[in-house]
Image (cartoon, rainbow, N blue to C red):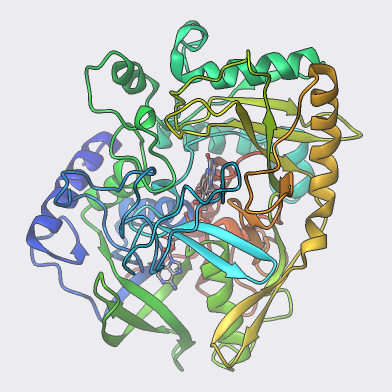
Length: 536
Ligand code: FAE
């Protein structure tokens, strides 16, 4: 019998809803789900690439275990909310930190955004590597729990340039539409955008961009814009309109636990084990993979390390996580046939953040939706390609500031090296490698400032810099398609070992990346299921 995706999603949502009530860390539609010792397929992580892969494996009848180091986010805490507020973050906000580390470090040079917190398995991590810090999501749903929900399909000409070996007709005819439909991508009603208070900040930025001759474009989203309208009308609890985004949205967002992962669980063949970090991968004589899995509780106590085996192993731990696992496996001799391409080709998607100071008369208003809906699109400019997301500063008060996350075409790449002392893969990236991103953003925003008689904000990033290029939201690469793997994510040198996530993409997509990661994962698993997987 063929089961529809919506029916699967419904059954999976029921499974997700019942586990935390029971205090379990193993999630499945089967009642007696136990932590398994062997599974035909194991998927590491529960972000975009992992979720796609698990759904397609489960739907094909392959018993699959997903191992996720973070927790499940579905149970309200004592304050009645699942996630903590961005304005008053508590221990739920960040992954084992003593103090929050917000991207906007200051306002008027004051550290107003950060708070001391108790170390806990919170939802947002900032992994600090010297000159570069990387923000990632932790929990069932990975980055979908903390991201801005912008669901952007890359320009076809640029996709063809970065991944020339991938059939673009197939991607744009089949896999991008499939990814967007499964993710629940929707578009803002342009009439409502023109009138609602929560996008006044975006309209102010749009006017400044248009005056300088730039065009803007609406950005699709996986935040439900109908829900947001009802938030404005006071009919439902507020989330985007209550300054929620990077520490999780309590409502309105179609994160992966509500889309792909729910459908995966609904196949009846997928189990998710939470608070389970894969530390080591090795291979047995018969080709089976063996994993060491460290299990913790929510406060970080190590409950034990257990071994698990799998015939087919899929790495979906994100650009940092998957790359680290294979760099460690190669350099500790556990998977010695892994080659030099492992750990190479990492990039920031050219991310750089900046703020502009508006004229006193150009009010952005005290209410800013946490979800961006508009971008300045100059990606087709052959001289200075930039796609700048018009980002909110949802501080709950008038800021006279316009904020942007610019995506630029920065050719610089970083490399991961194994550090035996810490047993970690450490990113090699120097601050000056971010300079091409600053130069590109500066060319765009110098023009916007000049035409509008405005200037940069120098108070937002902890010192007096106008451009922040020391962090990224968009880590990409490390296990690049066609270099570390074949053209479908099969790791070179090993059978039945696959990469499914953002580490396949060579450092840049020209837009926010999760739609690209999702569509590529759909394409790769279709091929792998057709050609490789045998479960007799
Ligand atoms: P990802 O979603 O990072 O998932 C990896 C998962 O693996 C995580 O749940 C980890 O906890 C888990 N994991 C890692 N290591 C291990 C291990 N050893 N054992 C077990 N589990 C492990 O991977 N992108 C957009 O397209 N639009 C946006 O608006 C946007 N906004 C963003 C805003 C923020 C604040 C951040 C942080 C990111 C944003 N992104 C956005 C980026 C997007 O979320 C990111 O590209 C994807 O989440 C990456 O997907 P992956 O499948 O690669």
